Image (cartoon, rainbow, N blue to C red; front, side):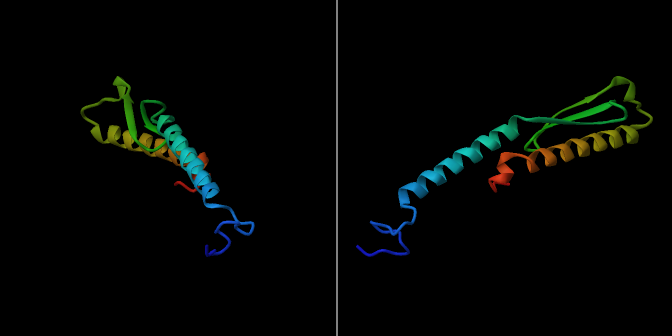
Length: 110
């Protein structure tokens, strides 16, 4: 049997194909678990002293928005829009930080 780069039978000290496949499978499992953890994680952003709160998942999926009733002023919709935007941006920044520090980032999956 021909050997290529030490990967044939009797392999010359290289990692055999079965070991490589096992390591690849383990890495895939770790990445899947890290993705699941990010999806389950929740981060929030607030604006207007807590008048608006936006919650997203660690994987940046929008979950919810809460608006205190006293913030709703039909004559100043622009302020409410600004508060929602600010809260969402804060939540997304938190998710970025969570993703940057997640095992998935360290595994090279994001």
